[in-house]
Picture: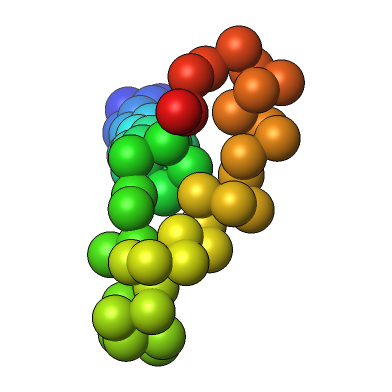
Length: 75
């Protein structure tokens, strides 16, 4: 009886650990998305587009209407 209980406890601990990892990854992903949409001024695309990414602000323009839809100021 105690062997089965120990096995169930290990399975529950494994599920909790997996859920904690998934929740952590979702939080990190959400924070990165918020940074990219609201605070980035071309730095994320600089490795791909060079100095033009700072002057063109591709991410800013891409998310411009979404910012207004969420009632967040952007200019």
